[in-house]
Length: 338
Figure 1 (spheres, rainbow, N blue to C red):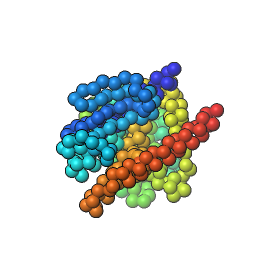
Figure 2 (cartoon, rainbow, N blue to C red):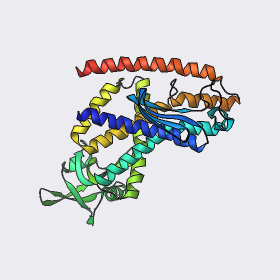
Figure 3 (tube, helix red, strand yellow):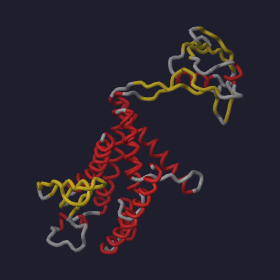
Figure 4 (cartoon, helix red, strand yellow):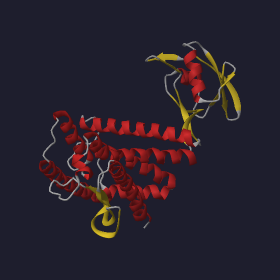
């Protein structure tokens, strides 16, 4: 039951934020929105306000914003309220806003985690000592805390790195605390690939930060995770990494595991899923936002819009193929879980 509730809540938030991006920018551009829906299939609940029907549908695996002008056969739509008759930049903004809001959500979730749980910060305590490096040769061990260099107190990892870089490879006296005792080591940093180092890795500690730092760190972390995902996808395409694709069943399973580990893990997983959703929607795959942006980009290059009926058929066929792919992935997920 906990897994089901957590999955519905997480999916609901990710989809709502995504569709809210489309909806808000469309409204701002003066486009008539016929329906803002969460889920697919039969309506469970709906109400209408200012010309827009807000609906909750039975199948909680998606959502949509149905705007005036998206259907080429639609009649009785004022030109100034039609998506198709808006300037190109406004149409692109409406489409891009959905994925963009998923990245914003991820940054907000990371910021909340950093404020209440802490931000991973490198400390002056040694986590690992690299073999055949100066620190290992001198006798530094994991768990040692570096408190001073040449008699100067060291309060952070950044200060430690600055002292090592400033040494230009000359011998330094490292004072460390080990098992309640203070020990001195003479270490000569070495130059490796234009870097000066001694061969240690820091132990990370969780440090709570204020709202401004948390938001900044949340944005930075979102960018780093997005870049990492793109790198991994590039490695998969070039056969440098194995293909490991999971569907809704696997995601629900992961949400259940995260829920068992606490709110922080659940928020972290939600942030990662939000980044994946935003990034996935930007790919030029039929029926996704990326393919619509591709057609709009082509319109901007050629100064001529793509035939709406042909574009809709392209999205329809692509959506059918995408559903088949999801079914295959779901089947594989179930087999792996069993």
